[in-house]
Length: 417
Image: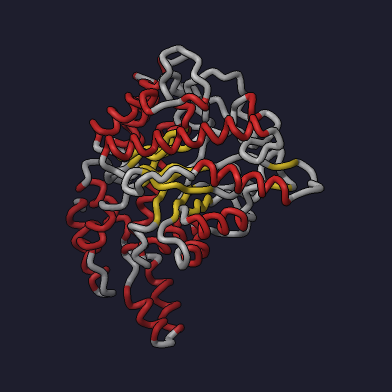
């Protein structure tokens, strides 16, 4: 059966439960996913400040072919993007700047160090997002940055974050697409602290200094990212969920919800509608934690489907910025991007195809019909709709993309030492 014929037959099934396939696909094509650059080189970056990855971050695996230069990383992204339906974005960390072989410390980075990334994004019609890199640096070696007891170290990281906002604004201006600049820090303690108050007071003071300068929201949006714990900060994280939720609401910043930054049995889907009662917009970092914040490649599981549903069914597409955040060096890195992003897009498609009759039944108090329709939806022919959407976007449907990744591995990735 042809892809188009299968799609038309699927359309009959969905129409019977009140779903307009064309409208769903049109909406899906407007939702960008921000791919994370750090999957392509195992969170290595392109500077040399003498700092190991550390700070609670760990990349496992040594699959051959990782990107070693900005050009290689962009080539790998080009390949991944060619296999993902829709028009998307790229999320850059500050230590992926191009410094021309010179040592440029993080408190001295400028938009010019990201000129090639901006040109690449403009050529491909992509938006860019940004992050200060408050790890892998000698001044983060003891696990504290913006909440450090040393005023000079705090000043260094404040300046780095200020410059990161300015770079984000420059990206937004150059591309005509608002940049989201997200602040995450590793600050915390391995064992129980004697004082939880002072570090949080210092962090709030540092953040206020970072955000003091007004930057147009048309150019840059500021986000702050909490975490439950990390390796080396198991007992205390300064920037907890409660801290950043209060900060975001009181300072009118975006709150970042990372799928791996909460208790293992706690999902972020339920948080979306809660925080959007008080914040106009939020940022998501979609990941997959296995027993801990282990940043596995995103798969099409119940957690992902729940996140996508909260966005699509409630019409939050313009209020929720979707980014990915994982790093797996045990498999082909281009495939890791492709699998994770396609799954995020596919989860959104499934959500957009939800029958409106389900909500109608709930509103009428008919919970029997609600449950019945929710279960029936699980076996509707979404696969036929997905393949048609991929084909209409000029990318392979099904697993046909894997052949192209294998070919790219053979002729490009295998040549890298």
